[in-house]
Length: 173
Image 1 (tube, helix red, strand yellow):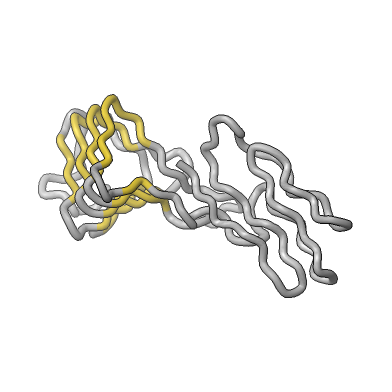
Image 2 (cartoon, rainbow, N blue to C red):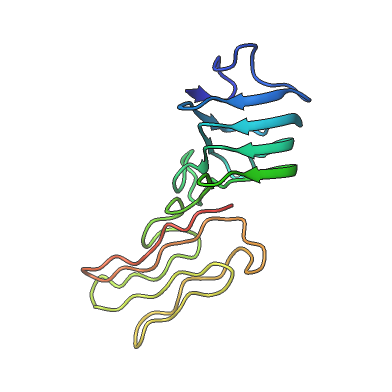
């Protein structure tokens, strides 16, 4: 387990045209885009970091889990992670996953975060691809960002009242 460019590979990091395989039980973090690989097979766990990191391969087979790191990394104010795969043929085998579930912004955080009212029992919904829902008699919803028809950024979290946190955690694929 380790980072893609570290010494986890028998012959160094895969180069253009190579066949790359992540073994069962191995977790690899991908922080920089790969060259165009001949094929990529994931039998373990592949974790994307950085918004613009791309896995490029002619053939991609998922026999394990592909996800991105949670929320924001690298000290950036906006979420910086998503799953981004460019390929000709993608196979996700039964019971395996490409998942961003619960990996976006947490409650009351993110680019389109819902508005928090600490002094009351009302808060608003988060925006993403459209404005968030306003609360009854309270603040307007979080601002729109991203695309409603082609989302590629993680979802924001809803607002928070004095005692209840809004929802959140929609990741980006």
